[in-house]
Image 1 (tube, rainbow, N blue to C red):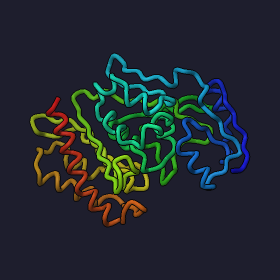
Image 2 (cartoon, rainbow, N blue to C red):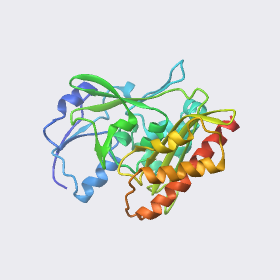
Image 3 (tube, one colour):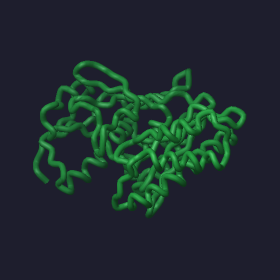
Image 4 (tube, rainbow, N blue to C red):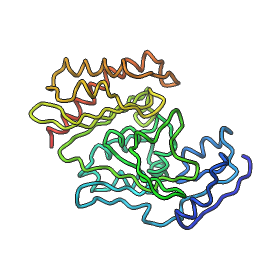
Length: 289
């Protein structure tokens, strides 16, 4: 491994000052679980890493606001999010998803901000957070801006973050009677990288679906809203034929990529089936509450 400079600033502001917008060899590192793997393969050779481990403790906090919104500091570990009682009570879909996100060792080290900023479409949290309507607070030299999670991704391993910007916080709006589901389809073990991830959130009033959000990942080059499927289900009465139509609409509206986890045709069929199952799971979750 090529030698590089390692900085450990004491604040988020110092960390941003240490980043260089003109040098792709300079990167921030939170938990480093994904970055270290890429470095070991030789695909990325940094000139400087800016560790965030010593920045202000407030960036590791989880807070449920009086209005029911969940605010997650970017340096909160996945384990902390997994075991937070307030999250399990108000956002049980997050707790369930984390239990099959890699393994305990990785969750102990990985940070929420890093999981979003890495840009890998196989990650589990980005599609789920996008379906929940989450926003990220992004800090850079010019100040703070907010962005919907789905707009954080520009392509395969590409984000819309500038090289001298960092995610400081994730804000997930209160569920307010909505329900959600996340289904990851793996070709090996349950905690492996998914061949497809589908996240759904919706409301239901007397069997009529509303505010439907469906997000795909892993089979697509980035986190992708399935807007044709959403439109089909919006204000629709729950029925098996309608859910099947939504699956067909989803399969027809996106470009699916093949990789080691499956061919494009295989993933297209997974998409048809999994959209239907994820919507059904979200509706069942709502009835159970």
